[in-house]
Length: 316
Image (cartoon, rainbow, N blue to C red; front, side, top):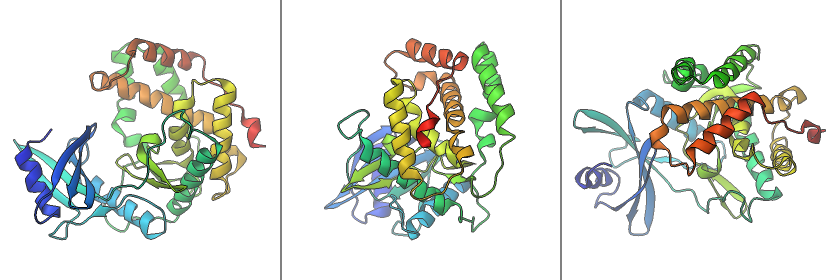
């Protein structure tokens, strides 16, 4: 975490008289909650090692585009100097600070009493609406988010898996890469996506979803965004997880007409998310608090040999 002196100085860039700073979490970025009187906001501080400034500029432009076109998103806030991004230098390292308005409501908890059909319908509908807007999004500046294949996890995957003797995972990755190059990239199926619209990155309030944390926004197939949302259900009992899939897609198609060919490819993209998360956690194994790491990796390895099957007939 950054020291208190730096945090106080940063808070004064957005709140003239400063604000109370509360640590929230550390993942790829540091996140703090700022409170000044009745005003609340969230400060995200990101190392340039994780995201260079041009990628953050591109992220914020995308978020503001979605907001201006009616999607409920947590938007960035300009500081007292009229800037969205504040550059911080600490011990020779560079960080970028951005302030966001909070998303109203509560987080939906995994398999809680909110883990029901209407929630999945809303979640799917929200993502369908987002993707409809993505179809018409054009980058207005020289800054552009990266393409999925330029993600370091993808570009370094074979090296990471080979170094760790993960033969089955390497075979799975190779198969997926050989297949995905055959997929078309028209604007109806491919574009800038959220990249991480799981339960942690949206809030539900009065029946409306507001999303945030577009740090993983990337050019990818739209079906991958659906796969990211449904990936945590992959090892649940067949009937349960297939219901979640059906409920999600029922909401999604309310906002987008999707060819059945692409719906049939959702299991493929869940496999892609599966191998991505395996490599990501393998590379950063000491950063994650998984209760039973050995069991988690063992179950993942089994899924590379025998992929989870999904009931696609429910779409009919």
